[in-house]
Every structure is written in C-alpha cells, then in structure tokens.
Image (cartoon, rainbow, N blue to C red):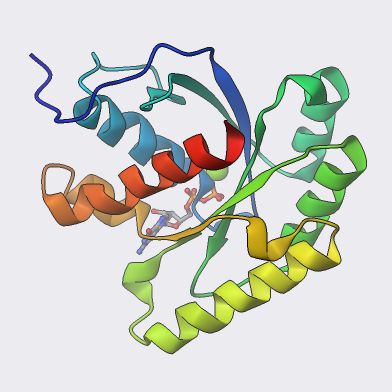
Length: 184
Ligand SMILES: Nc1nc2c(ncn2[C@@H]2O[C@H](COP(=O)(O)OP(=O)(O)O)[C@@H](O)[C@H]2O)c(=O)[nH]1
Ligand SMILES: [Mg+2]
C-alpha cells in the first residue's frame, strides 16, 4: 500500500539527538527523513521526527541550540543511541559545531554519525572532500574516532523536492543505513 521497496524492521526504538550549528539544516533534514523514509520502508506516514529503518523505529530530537542539547542530555543521555551531527558542506564546521560535540562528549554520548548537507549549494566536489576531512579531524580532536564515524553527503532540500525520484531518495536512505550500521 505504501509503495516502498524496502521493509521496515521491528527492533527496539532508537533515539538520536540532531545537533549542528544553527542554519546548517538540522530541521530540514529531520523533515526529509520523516517524509522520505516511510515511503521507502513501506510504513504509514509518521509524525515529524519519527521514521522506521530496516532495523526498526527511530525518534529524533531536533535541538534548538547547544543549551537545549545540554538540557536534554541532563535528563536522558543514557537513552540516546547516538547523535546525528549535521554540517553544511558550504560552511564546514563552525564554533557551534564544536560546542555541540564538546557537550556530547562531556555527557558520554558514545556514537556520532554525520550528515554533510547542502550539497546542492557546492559545485566543487573537492570542497566536499575537504569539509569531510575537517569534520573527521574535529571529531578526532573532540574524542570521537573520526575515521570510524559514518559521513553521508547529501541535500535534505533536494530529497524533499525530489522525494519521489531515485536521486532524491538515495542519500536519505544511505543515511538511514548508516544510522542502522553505527547506532545498532
Ligand atoms: N539549498 C539548500 N538549503 C537548505 C538545505 N537544507 C536546509 N536548507 C536551508 O537552510 C536554512 C536553514 O535550515 P534549517 O533546517 O532551519 O537549519 P537548522 O537551524 O540547523 O535547523 C533554511 O532556509 C533551509 O531551507 C539544503 O540541503 N540545501
Ligand atoms: Mg532548526
């Protein structure tokens, strides 16, 4: 009925905080995941921030700023499977990116997955490669093993604009697969 080719899993719910500098596309990515994945994984439409992957359901928490993240961590860091770090490929990591990672590290968040977004605004693939290296270096510096964290490139806006096209869906599905692989 829902048309997708993939089957949603029935494992336990995973929870992840969506972190990253203001304006880097966190809320847009949350919308794209909630919109694209139910169609892909043959699930009924889901509320904003929820979707189902091959392994099972997800609940995302879209953080407003590092203080909001810290207050969420204070009440439930142990309940998080990990954090999804959003970095604009156009701007690269900013001081607020670092502040979020420091807060995650301090609260004992074990796993970080990265979405390197806004690919549609970058016309030079070398820029994307350099920004990915910068993000991995920052992760290392902040105590996460940068070379072990998945980094998925894409554009949340394109995924929604082209929600029914293969190209638009591909990166969002890859991100879902990376979350399954990294967060368990
Ligand atoms: N071109 C482009 N714009 C984007 C993309 N993702 C988000 N934006 C825009 O960037 C701005 C900030 O996005 P938002 O999701 O609110 O960022 P947040 O502050 O991290 O939640 C908004 O105007 C979005 O429409 C993208 O992939 N491509
Ligand atoms: Mg936002």
